[in-house]
Amino acid sequence: MPTADPRQHSRNNPANISIATLIAQARATALSFAITCPDDLAAALVQRLIKHAGGQKIYIPTPAHSKAQQRNAKICAQFTGANTADLARQYKITPKQIRNILRQDSRNFTI
Image 1 (cartoon, one colour):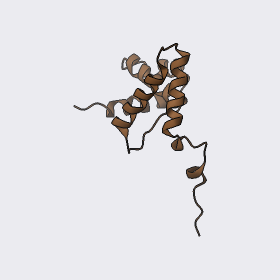
Image 2 (cartoon, helix red, strand yellow):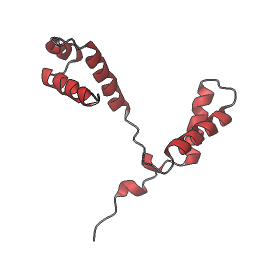
Image 3 (cartoon, rainbow, N blue to C red):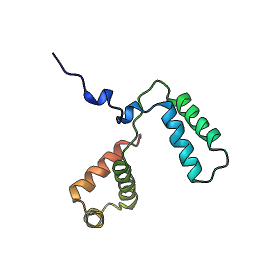
């Protein structure tokens, strides 16, 4: 008999965040920025999320993944065609990783 995935029922699983939790977190964020109507802002943010992504699975990258995406964008912007080794040293990654980042970036463009 297969066992159920324990992540599906965990309260700490980010996929199980409720609308009330989202509203509370948005309200707390609004308060930290001294926004005068944090409840209205929180409700509006949640309603926009529901309107644009209701019923869909949403991927929210981890901070580390987001940081890597920012680094990769900088690498692509700084690439001149002949500075692979320099970029590798600057970002403390291998030249092969630089080439992979550039290759991956080129797939995002349509010609």
